[in-house]
Length: 209
Figure 1 (cartoon, rainbow, N blue to C red):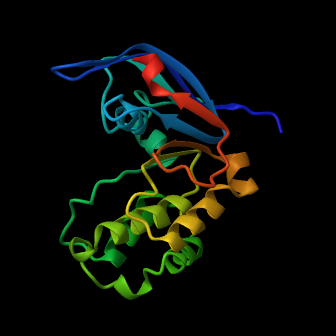
Figure 2 (cartoon, one colour):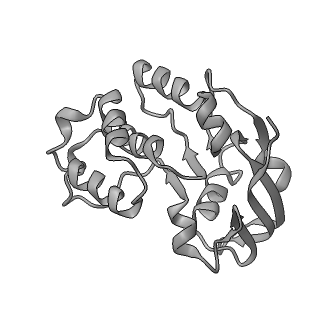
């Protein structure tokens, strides 16, 4: 199958107050899994946050299948999903409320598919609990269930295997390596534990700083 560019990044500049991270970074990313590899502090998570719109670059453009992040931010976010390692800061929501929120944010998501992912990650018995009561591993499974059910072009995953048990790791490996997903989604992943995922490309972040 011929690979096509899904995410295009051109002349990206980003700096924190105390440190410049990227100067004129450009890159094209296709369907399949790109593993962002690098040492702690190299900028892997920063890149994912820039691509997700969670951080704003000082210069440059980010386009997803022709959708410009600056000019069409809402449409860009509807076609992408950022699965971070952060615990959601919405303590008043139950797990069920959190799922309903994402069903409204992603109207093309199939409720049945989301329910299957919740079942696969063994989260059914936690639906009525506040998300603030979930463990780190349960929070990660909740975010992964939503990520795997989202009908998006771009899936951004920051350390998706952290805090998972063996059963969940095996399931995530199997799901991410499915031909249907690899043929249709651009998956950008940071991880120190790639395991058995079928990686299409390895991207060394240290070389672009």
